[in-house]
Length: 75
Image (cartoon, rainbow, N blue to C red):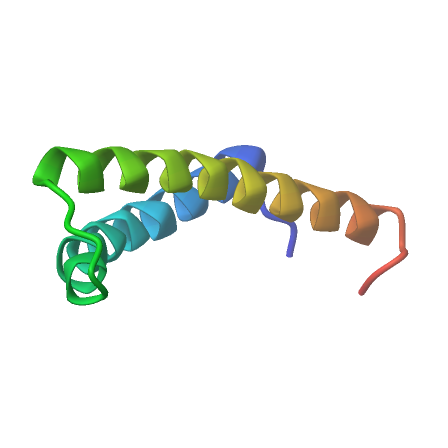
């Protein structure tokens, strides 16, 4: 079954949103536990930067594999 670009973007966005919430909580608790105190604002910016990177990577990989499937390179 072929996934549309919009469907791929929706799935990726929901996945990244869930990851965003988990990552933010982890940065707030784990970094200070490791001796790297961070404020809520700092944790938010770190999370935003990694989230944007993850969104671009996930969407790009999904589109690449869809192209490879269409070309018959992968099942």
